[in-house]
Length: 151
Ligand SMILES: [Zn+2]
Ligand SMILES: [Zn+2]
Image 1 (tube, rainbow, N blue to C red):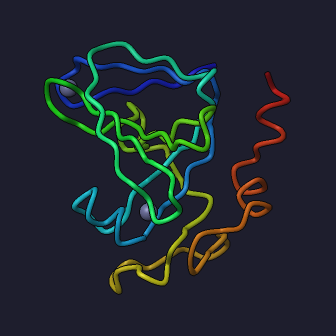
Image 2 (image 1 turned 180 degrees about the vertical axis):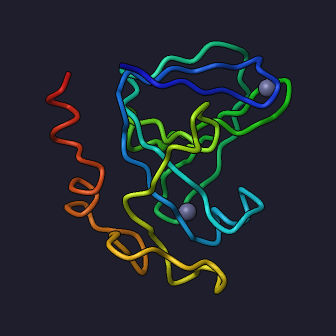
């Protein structure tokens, strides 16, 4: 099974070779500014299971950690589709709202809720993090081990 998405104008399309990769909501102020919204819906996928077609533009941003975050946008409509980070070459973080069936998404975790906008009310039963989760939490939230094993 795979899931697909693309930009607003249709010039860029992508396919993720996974059934339902987990996604999370990030409420950090960077995501608020980047998205022009209250939070960003992010879906980290393995680069080896992610195929993109169409012309992309890239722009890099330096992170406080010293890494560079590169955002990939449609060259025609400038819709943001995914980001990569210099220290994680095998991972692409897809802007999950660009999926064709984004309506089916349900974030498994909310991070950086310290800077969450007050009107956003979070449902019970989800993993909540004041800031960035640690490595072990990430591993669990994103179900990395099982997903890698699935091929
Ligand atoms: Zn486009
Ligand atoms: Zn964020």
